[in-house]
Image 1 (cartoon, rainbow, N blue to C red):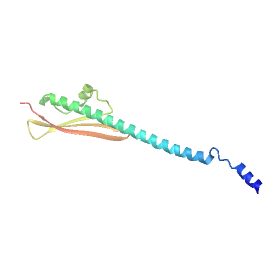
Image 2: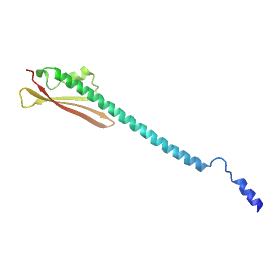
Image 3: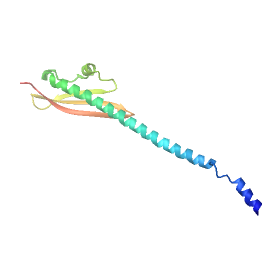
Image 4: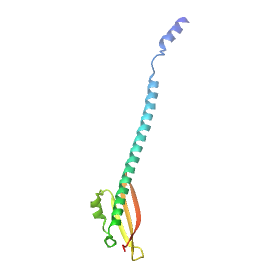
Length: 135
């Protein structure tokens, strides 16, 4: 009986770790890396979309401010290309300025919109204004 006990003690090694321990550790590490990398990718995408949205809003505000400065008679459809060149709006952003009758001879209804695409998803910002005839 003493030999069997000594044999059992010799075959069982309490030092180190087994392959099963290593496999569990690698799986846990892989899950951790996957979660962290997905988090970083989502943060990057949100940041990029926010920056693109801020740029589009910036360009739209610049155009609106300039339309406010020009005379009533100059405000008409077809001004988009000149504003794209004036403010350096990239071709990836589509600027549309629609001028229509407001029902009042001293005012024009102007709809400004800018559209862009981010990761196969289109975003559109629309602002409506009235251009009042100067006295």
